[in-house]
Image (cartoon, rainbow, N blue to C red; front, side):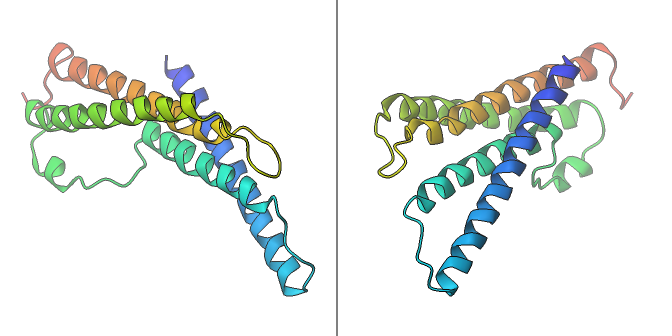
Length: 162
């Protein structure tokens, strides 16, 4: 299971990194083209929007898996190890599961209803929206798995505060 988690995180991170490189390259080319009055690229916005969506959502999912996203953990750090921390983490996990379930569901609804093509490149819009339910599902499954593991560590393996 750990291997699948590592593979998923690496895949998400690589897609997000590639999207960032594409985004940076396109913006650089567009700035240079406009600076030298070479004109703009009509298709530019379509690729930028897709790259930005994949960079943001897949990057967020990769950070979520490694718990490297921004966190305010001062309250958790003030609590003793064991059941008190588990209770706080459980509340946070429950709120996260609720949010991620809604995000994944409505991301899927958006993905399912998007039938339009981009004006210039004729790329299906749903390809851009796919990042929402995919990243949401990954974060949701990881949160549930982390909660189960945290619960096992606290109650079955032993309470470190004893």
